[in-house]
Every structure is written in structure tokens, then in C-alpha cells.
Image (tube, rainbow, N blue to C red; front, side):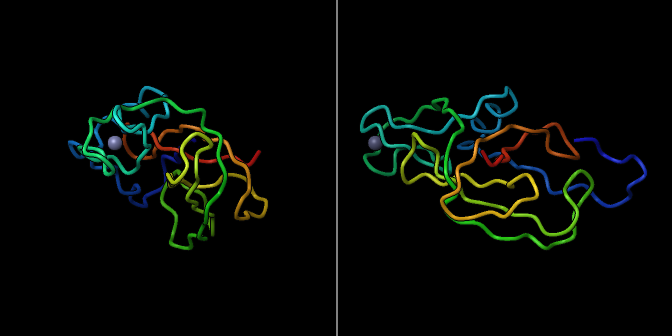
Length: 140
Ligand SMILES: [Zn+2]
């Protein structure tokens, strides 16, 4: 997504990774969508935490396919920043196919209507104003 060099609006807020979430952000930078999974009870979880919410076990990041369905969404109507869409655009919580109960947030691309239960596929894109990458969801 190109950023207009004459656009004087401030860049969107940047991610501020914590010790728990730095793995998530570094994985995205490397182009890999991965979700924490417990090595003991095998439960998936997001957002990232230090230990498993279910059993206290050790967590690792496991790559996932990026396929999922929209659990819910909102229409963002805040003013856009450089590199982000103009006007209203949907931001969804998506349940990945492999990770029941996990909800990943992200902007939904395209111009068509968004519906709950709609199939989407994740794409990792550059976040304007920095060197981080974020997840967006493309309808399929
Ligand atoms: Zn566990």
C-alpha cells in the first residue's frame, strides 16, 4: 500500500509489542501468521500471554493457514490516516479455521458487504508509518 508523500496527516498508531506479544509481531514481520498454542493441553490462544490460560503450560507460536470466518465486525468511521482506506471500512474479529475460540482482529479488504460467518483469508501487509506488518482479511 503506497503512502502519499504529500499527505500531512499523522501516521496511524504503531504497535507497541510487550514481552508477551513480541513473538507475534516478529512473526508477522517475517511474513508468518502464527497463533500461540499450549505445548501441554494444545489449546490455542490470542492475544499472546506468558503462560497458557487453561493449564499454565508453556506456549509456542504455531503457523496457521490464514483461512477463517468472520465472528463479528464493526464499521470504522474514524478519519483515515495516510495509507489507510478513506471513509468507513470494516474491522472484524476472525476465527481461524484451526483455532476454535480464537478471534484475530483485522481490517476487511474489498468493497462488498461484510457478513458474520463470511469466509476470509488472512494477508500480512505493511502497516503505514513504520516497519511493522499487520493482518488484513480478504473475502474469499
Ligand atoms: Zn494449556
